[in-house]
Image (cartoon, rainbow, N blue to C red; front, side):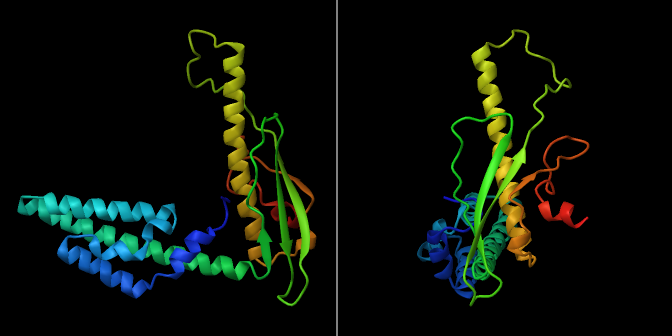
Amino acid sequence: MGDLYITSAEKEALKSIDSDELDLAIRECVRSVKPSQLYGFNLESCGLYVSNKLRYFQKSIDSHSRAKSSKKRDETAESMRRAGDDLTHAVQQMQQRMEEEEKDNLLFRIDDNIFLPSHYSDRLEVKLRYQWRKNTTDDWKHGTITFLYTPDLSPDYRFPLPKRKPSASKLAQERQDQLHREWEHLKLLSLHSLRDFFRSGGNGHDVPESYAVITDPYSRSLNNFSAHFWRQSSS
């Protein structure tokens, strides 16, 4: 499963939902204090964001059904209504995201299925493949960009060092774990950076073959702008 786009199964589930019918069903669940009205909407298949909101709504219904005192029932009733609204909005947000992605895919597509490296070196790389075109009648053009990053893994001396020195193998594994987390962060930033570039009307001819990301000047780590390759070229 990729990290940028909604999956085909999630799209199918989202497209099958009429938001007005869902809203009515959620209101009926609140009125009856039963979640059975939602069983036909296949909300569990709409992605993690929606399924989490669904579970929270179901939990709030259960909490309200168990409440005894009037004060507690007032509190749980309000929580149940808010959770229902959150579920409605979550589905609507995912449907809007799906529509936006389908619009994007008319002019650009990014391969977000990126395999994990078997071993991490101190210099991390994320290579993205993409295709783009200026108009829907044009032929697709293809390209790649590699994002480069050498993370600072020096010890954080704000925290005490372990009393017993770890073994060399443990230190090596801890370093690989750190590099893995940094690589995952770099991957997500790279994917969203390239998507935002094309979404804002960027031309694929202006995408460099490689880009060394810019770290935060204070934390010396990645931030939300580190992979914005077009900012540096336009400044």
